[in-house]
Length: 441
Image (tube, rainbow, N blue to C red; front, side, top):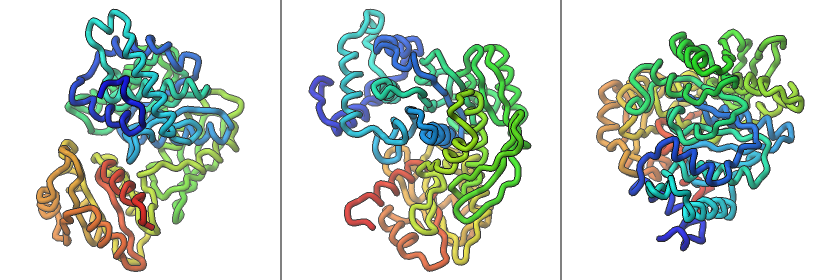
């Protein structure tokens, strides 16, 4: 279908989904040119740019929840989406409507019909991710937000979101082994790619969890002229885990320890909240007071991250080795009066062997079920079951469909049982779609 013929949300979504079939990655120079061709949306907004391996989306959600508590209009661009593509762009906690999504699509499409000569000569067309990024920037401009929170898609240096030059703040979350085919084989190389988002004179907030990663970020910051704002583990104190919340205290600069609460059992959200609070203090916005930050952090929720979708049924998008370890730490900290069950799946381009070994050797689960995801990237069902068998003697049931797995492991659970669903954000999305089907309670 030609761009000018697209007049519905469904058609716009279909078109964007078709882009990878005929378009490769564009140069950063061309991405910047097209953003300028759009009128440089976001140039009068305060932009917070976030990169990292794990925790990016959660930090985005923390920041925007605090902005909402302060009554400050803010836009948030994240990826991937779980069910609907329009989840990637939100203003004040509300995702774009189908009408807003279509309007933003049409705006970008119209700009493609009138390309400047330097882009027309190369037959420029945005990649899948670029198209959505451009739409989001237009959506935020129309909404007249004050802050824009941008999550990188992959890496940082060459990510489409890095086409934005003027930034108020950068955040780099925890760094781990993921997407090594694009980012490098060592943590230092991966950190350097992520640190490509830095700008002269702009603060960069980052956790000091691995000395080699922090050192590489600081080297990149020195070369760029960015201002280092490290967050040390000692800034977090008095972690108290409850059934559905975690209380903790933070201390930064001249502040004494301040108490916060995250409304989740996920231990890793304490670190993400700490990064968000330190970032907010860097903004020096007088509307963002301590009570506002407390309220915003308490209200923050992020789908698919240790989310209790039904009583004692938890959905977590952990999909790499560090994410799985953080997930297992949370499971370990939770009490269970019955049987712990795990429903697992993964895509073939992740470190599935190491992830499955980590899960199996944790000894946390009494039963394991595996199911194959949809799509070409899915790891085959027989491989999933065989790999679990290599590392554990636990029963591992292979389910032919997600419906069957959900019915037996979730709907058929006994009182006191806990069910965990993890291994991929794609699995989280398929579970979300299943729960939203008409007639499903």
